[in-house]
Image 1: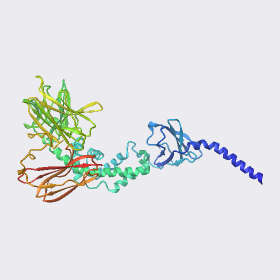
Image 2 (image 1 turned 45 degrees about the horizontal axis):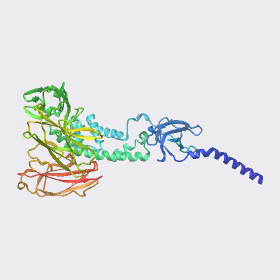
Image 3 (image 1 turned 30 degrees about the vertical axis):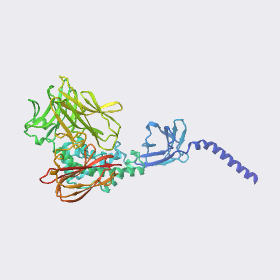
Image 4 (image 1 turned 90 degrees about the vertical axis):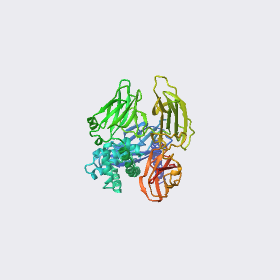
Length: 593
C-alpha cells in the first residue's frame, strides 16, 4: 500500500515537473496583455490592452480555426501601423470559431503574450458585407442617413443643395463666415424651402436608433468596441442636432448678407507683368437682364456682355496693364471697386479687405483671423503723414509687423491680455518721384516665416480716412478719427442732448461663464431693436433680434456659447425710435470652457 502511494506521489511529481518545464517559459510571457474579441458581420475585431510602460516595436497576431488546428501567424503589425491596439480580421468564414492570441515585442525584443492556453475566441455574424461602404466613418454614415431622410421628405430637392447643407452641419464652428465661404449661391432657394417648410424633425430618437442599428455591419470597420460605438453615435447625433439649429438660426443672416450684395461683384484681381485680369462673381443674374455692365478706369471702359453673365457664375475679364484699379459699373452706377497691386494675386473680402491669395475661387467674408488687426488708417497727403491704429487681444504667441513699400516701419508691441487693446502710431513717408502710392502690409511672423494678412494701397496725392466699424468689422470711410480708442460712427458722435433714454443694458450673468449666460435689458419706451453677439474681432456670432419692434418692458435672452471658442465676446443693442437716430451700446463678456 505504501509502495503504491509512493508511486502515485512519484508520478504526480514527475508530471508536475514536466508540466512546469513546459509551462514556465509560457507563464513568463503570458500576462501583461488582455485580449477581447468583438464579432460583426463578416469580421472579428481584436482589441488588446498592454502596459503603458512597454514601448512596442511590433505585434504578431496568431489565429487558429477550431480547437484541433494549430496556431499560425495571421498578421505582423509594425509599431507605425498599429491602430490603437486593434486589429480587424476580415478573412473569416461563417460557422467557424476562431481562436486568437497576440504577441507584443518591445524595442528590447522582450515578448509579451495574451493567454494562448485559454485563448480568446469569436465567430462572425452572418450578413451581406457588400453593403458596407469602406470609405465611411461613423460621421459619414450618419450624414448619409440624414441625407436620405431629407431627400425622401422633400421630393424634387436638388441633391447638391442637400449635400452642401450637410457638409456645413459637420463643421465644428458654424457662423456667417462658414455660410459665405462654403455654401453655393444657387442652393439658397432650396434651403429656404427646406427650413421654412420643414415637414419633419430630423433628430427624433428614431433617427438615432436607425443610426445605431448599423452596429453589426459597421462597428468593427470603424475599429470601435460596443461601448465606444454607443458613445460615438450618441455624440455625433447630439452634435449634429445642435448644429442643425445653429444652421437654421444663422441662415437668415447669411441670406441678408447675400441680398445686400449687388447682382455682380468683384472677387479679386491678378496683376502680373504680362497679363492683368479681374475676377467677377454673378450673385443674381435675374437682376442683370438688359443692364449695362462694364469695368472702368478713368475714361476707359470694358463692356461685359450678358452672355458672359448668363453662362458663368464666376468669370474673368482681361484688362489693360496700365490700369491701377478697376471699377464695376452697372447702369452708370459704381457698385464695386478694386485696387490692383503689381505682381500680386489678390482677393477682396465682403469686409472690403484686400488679401493676397493663391486662388480666387469663391466669396470671402473676411481675412484670416488674427489676434491683432489694423483697425483704422489715415493718410494726409499735404504732410505725407500716415497714421495707423491696431487693435486686438494679444496672447504673445506671434510677432506682428507693419511695412510700407517693402520696409518695416512698425514692430507691434502689445502686452499679453484678455482685454481689447488699441495702439496707434504716426509715420512720415517720403516718396520718390516715380512712386505714386504706398503699399501697406500687415504681416505676422510665425516660426521665422512671414505671412501677409492684409494689404492697403494708399495714393500719395489723395487723403484717406478709413476705419473698421464696429471694431474688427467692415472697412468704411469716416470723417471721425478715434485713434487709440473704440471706433464710433457718426451717430455715436452726436451731441448727447439729442439722444433719448431708451434702455438699460445690464451686465450678463454669470460672467465669466462656461456654457450659458443671460443677457438682460430694460426697454424704457417702444423701439425697434437689434441685439447680437460679436467676437473680439467684431464678427457677429449670434443674432437675437434684427430690427424688430419691441414694446417697453423687461427682456432676457440666454446665450449658449458651447459651440464657440474660449475668449472675449461683446453683446450689443441697437435701438431706434421715431425722430431720433439709432443708439448703440455694448458690454463685454468672457467665455471660459
